[in-house]
Every structure is written in structure tokens, then in C-alpha cells.
Amino acid sequence: TCEAATFNAELVALRTARDLTAALRLKLKSFGVRLQGPTDMHCDNQGVCCNVMVPESTLSKKHNAINYHVVREAVAMGMIRVCKEDTITNNADAHTKLMHYDKKDKLFGSLQIK
Image 1 (cartoon, rainbow, N blue to C red):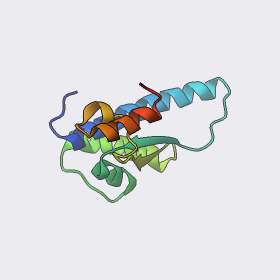
Image 2: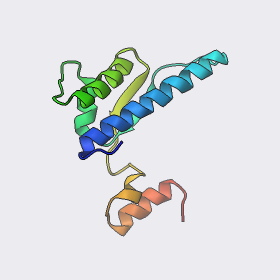
Image 3: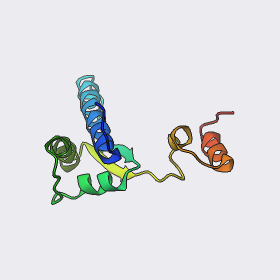
Image 4: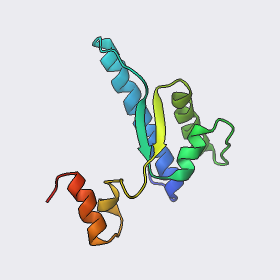
């Protein structure tokens, strides 16, 4: 999908990641692999992180609310855990944001890319 706001895009991405995680966890369980704990999902949007972790939050747009409830259900049942990823440690930001060379070099250094 194409979203106009980063909040909407992050919520859609989180829902897609939840769908893929649910499928992978089911496949692993069918192979007999024991899963311990939830799958960590790192999100760089503070608003999305807060909304999916707080059950009382409400959203005004219906398509956002549907994505929210799918992700919130996965959090509530312990399938996933959503946490905030800061720009300082977010490797994806080196590819998508304008930042100083030193910062970019530090992020690429953690990926072992020269």
C-alpha cells in the first residue's frame, strides 16, 4: 500500500511483519521447534510503539484501527513485543536519512560494510 503519513506506513509495516511472524512461528511449531518468548519487533516511530503497547489508545481512521487491532492482539497474546529503535542504533536510517558521515560510518561499521 501507499500511505501519506509515516505513522500509517509504520502501522501497515508492523501489521505485515506480524502476519509474516505468525506464519513463520506456525511453520516452526509444525516442524517441532519449541519457541520461547515473543518475537521482538523494532519500530522507529514513537507514536506507533506507544499506541500498540497501550490497550486504551484509540485511532480515528478505520484502516489504521484494523491494523492497530491486529498488532495489538499479537502483543496481548505474547506473540510479538514492540520496542522503540532509536536513530543512533537504527541501521536502516543510514540508507534512508540524511546524516553526517561519522554517524553513517558508525552504523555501517556495525554491519561490517566498507
